[in-house]
Image (cartoon, rainbow, N blue to C red; front, side):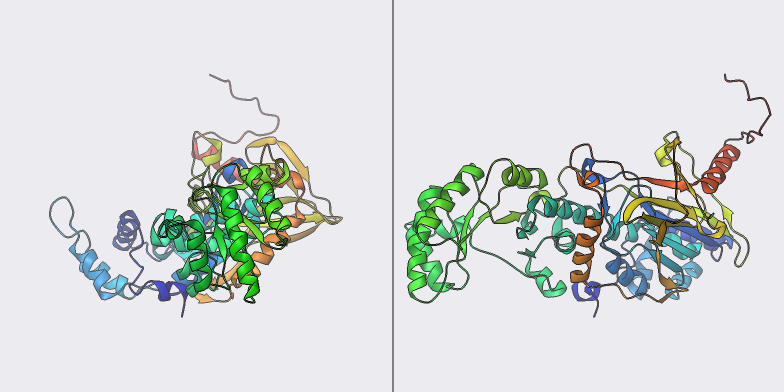
Length: 502
């Protein structure tokens, strides 16, 4: 049973925006529902002011499109909608069409756990426009947020090094859906466990947990609270020590830890959730070591993120061995939305030639790329040298030239002996799945392996190095010609006088 089936018993076909259905209806009315289209999902800037992102969410997107169908109650609801004249918004024939609808498109995507960059297509859908258009909102919903949180988690992993990271942000997450998706993406991005039991049950993520301040306050004293917890959970004792006085709390934990040891159990460690974490962790480490508990871990929490973890670990000399991250991870603090988009890039009559499309904008970053895009990642002498976006039907020259889509003067020649790997892989062909999404453990490994291949400057949090991503020169020229034509400006011919500037 799929993750979506285990969590949601209802149909998910209406996880969509109304305008997707109104456009689908208009295509049906116009007789263009079978026209084929190509759409690409991408994002416009790397999140958190960083130099990369981590692709995530594909497995759930695969589940969604594989099970796409409109149930009778979905159709009945759509039939109840009215236009501004009080008449039904949709004709009965269209509703009958939806009853028979299923995913029948091709889908290519970059595997989860891959390090990706702005402007690159993470996913491509080609097929009947009515169906392909309906996928815009659900695909963005599934890919955007998880990519954002996986990227945040990967940044925290870079800061923490080999230290364990536990995600426990469910209570601060954006609802139950947001909590489950965040736990999945956080684990994929590099966290080692979660407090979210539903994520543990449904996704197989290791679950971790201690006790809260309320446990301590429920007793007459902190030592009494620790003793009671140790009696109940002798094999899960991490004591939260900052309810009253953090260092006195560490001493109380040591006392209970000695009694646990005498009974054949070992205290796992203590948790700090407030105050000067650098100072308190150093003092706590001293107390624990002197008392004979050198293996007891010090877990820290309290609004941690990648920059705070990095400062505590590498600048302030904190003696923290486990990092508990919550709010700032699950709400993607610092960049609340990835800004992913799903844009039409080509249309054709079934079996005919593609007609390339480009959407214009006053902002260059919002002008879309036409055609059927693919991304090729090049390696030269073992070093990653750039990602080339190119048009698959047009092919590639032996030694392609990469053009920065936002600055045509920035160009890079790919050496003829460079090795290239196409990132978009086939996932569906005519609605039939041809790809088996990897499990979360494999995705986590991929994230680590991918990040290890990139130069440290790309992973820097402040003023990161800009990894080369660009359009193949012939493809760039094609895009430029389409833009000029759309603006009613004839392409300039070599030797012809330039038009006068107004």
